[in-house]
Structures are given as structure tokens and as C-alpha cells.
Length: 245
Length: 111
Image (cartoon, rainbow over all chains, first blue to last red; front, side, top):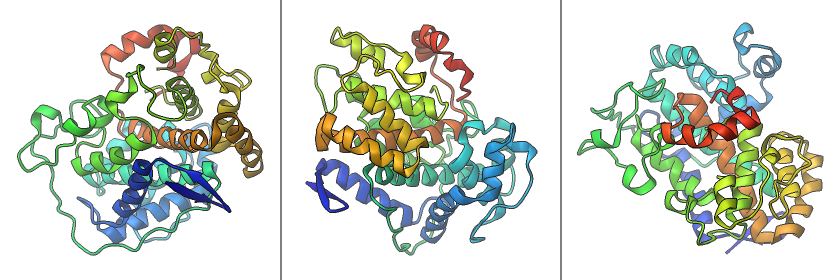
């Protein structure tokens, strides 16, 4: 399979292309806590954050928490949602527990916050891929009608992270269960308060990177570049983002 | 994981390529240009990025280039999950990476 990059056609794994197309669609599809229209607004706001003057001043400041102001926003979402989106998009490395808890325990709520984390992560992945390739930013899809389910897993609890998470052993019969598919490391639990978002993010991520069982299978190379090359890239990207997880 | 993957095939490695000034390739084939590519995608100008892309394609081929782009995309995104939720490093991972993190001063990174 080929992907258009300017006037060139470059080879791309069919599974990756399918995952990319599915990820674009998930942005526009009703989520668990936000409608399709709101999810597209979140993605749009995440892009807009890159040119937000307040975000730029905060990024340059010794502490982002010392700078007050108003975000350059489309005003399509509540201000607490805009604050979450812009910070996640532009300066996630300096997010604190206090900041997260303020949003999670306030008007936004932790469920809506987690879905914002997922949407911002997905659009970040899609846009970074296109930037790296040399393609223009993709057009955001038209929202799909429908209402969010507003399903909160009964077994979710605040034990591991700054927000509630759902442990694999606490998944209920009506909960989406991403753990048998994607694994149950802490990174898989990060979005687990909204289990569908674990699917939405990792369905894409395993094709961008590697599936859980492939990561340490050094007997086989799953990509055109080697495990060592992949891990060098991964390590460098994590270091640039100041993240050691 | 760079240490584990290198050890698996008895290759040498240099972890300072991860946190260094971008001139080291970590003992990985085409490591210098791959590190430069990551830097250009995540923090370089459009002009810098244009300059590096052709080098990456020449080094690892077009399919490898696409996979390199995908890997950068993954790790630029997954960091949002860790930073945004405060999930901790697993105990087993903390123990196995303590020496690396000390050597590279990675514990200065909060998430």
C-alpha cells in the first residue's frame, strides 16, 4: 500500500493505514463523555493551542502556573476544558497533580478530562506523523451524530494515578475491556477510566510503534527499521519531551 | 529498551545518544540521522526538517522512513497519557532501569 506525500508515493503497511483512517474517524465519533462535535472541537483546540499567546508565555516562563490570562480559543468548549486541552497540547511535561486534581474534581470532572487526554494524544499522533512525513495537517472529519454513553466503570478507583483508573481485575460485564487486546501495563491503565479511549488510542499506537508482545520479541523484526532503531527513536523522542516513563 | 534490544543481538550501544546533543548515534545503524530526524520533527524548524528527511530516506529507505515517522508520532503522543494522568513507573521497570536513569540524569524528568 502507498501513501501520498506531496508528489511522491511512499510504501506504508496496510495495517498502519487502516489504523490511521480509524483514528481520524474516532475523533468525530461520539465518545463516552463528549459528542462527536465536541471531540472535533477538542482536536481543533489542540491545534489552535500551538499558536496561543498565553500558552507561549507559559511555556517560556519558569513556572507555567505564574502566568494568568485567557487562551486564544474558539470558545466552543467550557474554559476548564480549553485549559486542559491547551496545557496537554503545549506543555504536558510540567503538568502537576494539583493541576490535574483541580480539573478532575471541579466542573470538568475526571471522566471528561480523561477523554480530553485521549483526543489530544490521538490528534498529536496523527499530526506528528503528517509533519514528519512532510504532509499538510489532515482535514478534521465531519462530526458523527449521536450521544455519549456516559458509562463510568463501577470498578474504577483512585489508587494508581492522579485520576481514577480501572484495574483489569475490576472490569465489569458492561465495561469495554481493552486489557486482553493491548496489555495491562500502567500506560494502558492511564486512560482506563474511559475504557473505550484505551482502545481508541492504542489501536492506533500499536501500529505506529509495536504491539505489546512485539516490543521484546527480538527474534523477529516487525518493521523495516530494526528494534534498535525504533528504540533509539523512541528514547530520543521521550527525552525531547522530558518523559522517562 | 535500546539496551535490551542491543543486548539481544550482542550489539554495542551508547545510551547517551538519547539525551546528548544529537551528534551521537548510540551505536545504532544510521543512528545519527535518526536522532537528528527526531529533533527536527519535535523541535526543529520546517526548513531543518526538510533538510533531514531526504537523509533519512537515503539511510533507511522509504518504508523505513515511514516507520520512523510513525515511531516519532507514537512517542510524541503517548507522553500525553503519562504526563496527563501521573501514572507511575512500574516497580519492575524502576529497578531494571535505575542504573540507566542515574547515568543519564533522566530522573530529572518528572513523568
